[in-house]
Image (cartoon, rainbow, N blue to C red; front, side):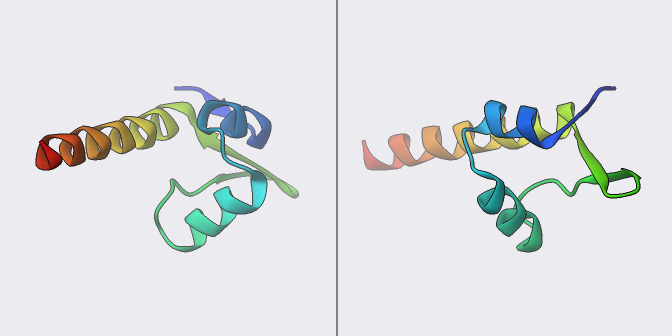
Length: 66
């Protein structure tokens, strides 16, 4: 299990900081884990799973359009 910081989440997803926090507030993105003080991180596995779900959604849309 690996905890990653915001910069790594942004690199993995291609999303900006404000978009990530917007998606978190809408319960559409994994919630961060408090690390102490003002520091937070995300589980790398949860972020990777979220990305795979987006790929699956894309693939289902392509099949539906065919």
